[in-house]
Length: 193
Ligand SMILES: [Zn+2]
Ligand SMILES: [Zn+2]
Image (cartoon, rainbow, N blue to C red; front, side, top):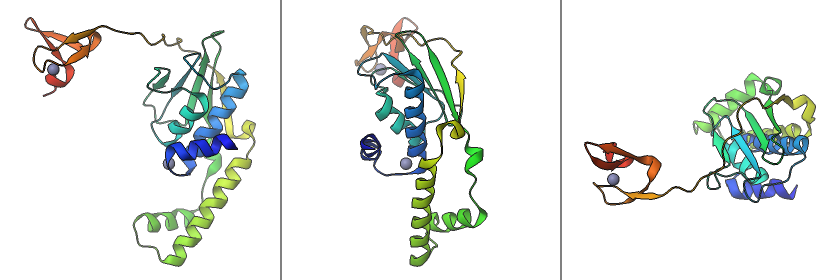
């Protein structure tokens, strides 16, 4: 569980979203028989931009900086992992319908988040949260996830682009992010004001 500790350190706190990302990333790596990427040997496609993603980054080694972490705004707790070595890819989807919380629990959470809970309620809430996380970590991979073959295109490797000077702000910009406006080269941030 050393790697879980690394996720918590990176993310800043322990939460359910982080644990979900951790479980998804560990399981996907296991199925693909892959290791944490040092370079771009694997690609991750995440379908949400929540706490989930931070654990995926730590466990898979896929980051925005390396260009092998791709975000699709689908709002789903799912991760696709693709190996560049053999072109194999899978998608794991977390079946959160199996993680229903009871009404009382949700009511209490809303009170805590709204700052309306008493000290005692807060400690009860924290205890429940800990238990929920503990229980979550015990669920078997096969029960927690649906596994699919990855069907999309393998995203191309990160490229290095030339830099071009913007005629307005005079800053250097990646050549793919500059537009020709009436014969002048203008960057996206200048275009957006
Ligand atoms: Zn979090
Ligand atoms: Zn500019």
